[in-house]
Image (cartoon, rainbow, N blue to C red):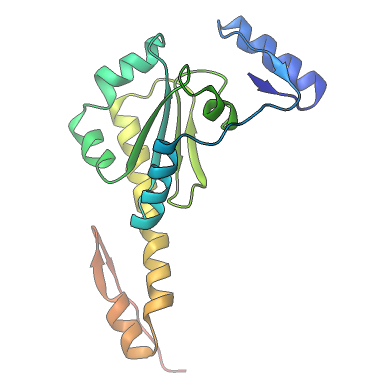
Length: 182
């Protein structure tokens, strides 16, 4: 399902989608039912625990999705990184409203979201274990950097506390803060 954007663009997107085997129709105002409870719970948990979200739109009939299920997700490095995220699988046949809300037009469609729900990256095709692990690692580092910066802002009340909060090891990165006399 495609949203109506500019007339020519919606028509070309629909034609391109149908050309590769995905039927599409253009609607002026898609109706988004309330998000499913499992999705709301996952987003709330991600915000509360400051964990990124991996949102995997899939379907049982999608061959590349099944290939990722068999090859990519069970890979030890990918599995280790996914353990640090909220991993949410959404069957587009069971939850078409959620797929429509995220403008899913083909599968697989994987979104990497920040803990606040902001989209950081999107994949629209099969991802092998090595490339997907690298993308997950990049996302986790990005979230950790933001978290560390936010911790410093809220923790530091003075120079001593700022040094103590900043001069530590966070994951695999040693953070060092040096004040120079002015």
